[in-house]
Image 1 (cartoon, chains in turn purple, green):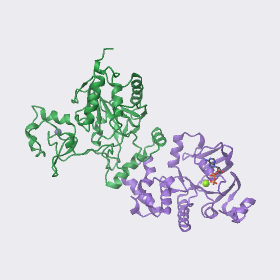
Image 2: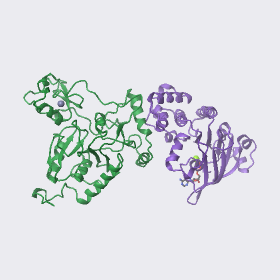
Image 3: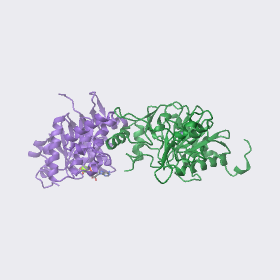
Image 4: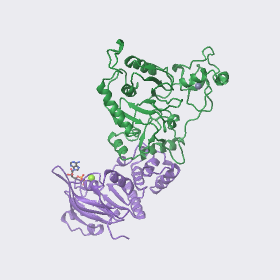
Length: 258
Length: 326
Ligand SMILES: Nc1ncnc2c1ncn2[C@@H]1O[C@H](COP(=O)(O)OP(=O)(O)O)[C@@H](O)[C@H]1O
Ligand SMILES: [Mg+2]
Ligand SMILES: [Zn+2]
């Protein structure tokens, strides 16, 4: 389709004082591509994700995003207003804990509709119809539309958070351990759903996970991190079936799997 | 400087010291320059508790001069405890003329109403505001709400209205109904009934808002656009009443329910007592003869001119101000 990446990341580093968050990370992300970032706890995955989504400013390095008009914009030079606009229109962010990404005291319908209202939709009937549609796409019954997420199970909350993010048709979604706090059976269902949505919508995504099975199921490409640095990257199947870095070999042989 | 009468010698004019008044005037001027924007100010202790209009009192104290004529209303009434004591306060500390007549007042301090009599250029309406932040109910973090105002991110306001419709089938917010000022800032009009919102739009009077506890002042200059938020398919509407005022037969005014006895007897009368009394006292008023036809069958006929005292009024909304508590 296009011969240019969606996101270009170059030599990105983040230090917390003298402590390394992530160090000298570079990669390109292509439209419709799902990249998994794996590594054990403390390896810098969340720090990297937060820098990329501009929730955190890096200590050094650059990241450019190709806007809908085709122009690349340097993320850390955008105004806060532009970044926030990007975050609620062209991007999504799925938190591990759904309570961090939902408004727990407003209804499911309003949670899904908020982004639409934020970009100026002013027709209640249409907003509600879109919310109904999105709830069904994440397998939440229409009759739960006026319930607050407080009344939902963990899996439902996570699916609601996903619907809330996807309603504006973003091109890039950041996910931090999206199946993290869930039971294994619930995880499997959510992964199926996510995989379907990502494929149907042609979404690009950066998925942080410590679970290699999640990476295998969702991503085409993966990066392995250790102590803030990328120790190996490549096509997911290749990295998992034929790991080259000794650390990845350990990880894959499940000795280090958390 | 004219000499001040002895009995106010222990106070500075209008109670506040000149330094404080200057500080508050600067906040007011800034508010006028940025219509609808909440200006922080160093709210002072006043000789009355928060919730009694300390914000409004400080604004009034900072703008009032010896030549002003002050009117104070509480829920539309000039004769409630709150209104009477604020009026008495300024009479004492500023020695100003006071009135209940809307048309002849130069400053009207109000809690929860805009008078029915249209305001004119040169008049100032000072609102007492308990909670100035319209986004507060959905976003409690002040750092975040400030950012939302700065970046004009007001989607959340419609989330609130969406919830209303989802729960009640219509926008059920009737007090403190949010407005957009001059196409820019979303503002809480204080807990006035939404009935009064249209009166704010392009009003010739200057409207000032003071929140004492929250230390905020904001303003709507004369002839400013004030638009109530709504949805295309659920447009803003004011309350309507299916009967006229039982005392003066006024229509298209805001009515309060008045309890008449212990047996469920009640009637609806003007919330604006000055407006009601004027209509009833006007010798040429055709309404005078027709008064008895109103719903007020149980009214004491020996005092036809007096508006029911506040004690008789059904408890009107106070600080809950129509924003549902979760
Ligand atoms: N806010 C912070 N302040 C100081 N150190 C931090 C902060 N956040 C993360 N770190 C440190 O940065 C490193 C990477 O953490 P993180 O990005 O959370 O890793 P992961 O998501 O892979 O578990 C860790 O050593 C962690 O202790
Ligand atoms: Mg993490
Ligand atoms: Zn009346």
